[in-house]
Length: 97
Image (tube, rainbow, N blue to C red; front, side):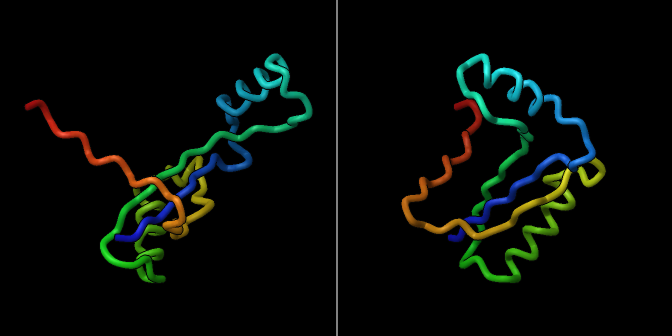
């Protein structure tokens, strides 16, 4: 099984209230010198087989269609995750027993 990461960020012209809140909290917690924070989302997907160019294209299309809102967000990264020390994704939670 292969793994792919998708990163989605708010478009630069879109207000990012979560990023602004984090930016405001950083100096109060002693983290000075940080001038901007933008908060995005990260998805990790498992795919059948190896991660090929075709798989990355499929995931890119899925990211643009489902994982992001193209009006306010950009898909900024779609890439294979190397297996080096990567923790496995947790198994899907089962319903009530």
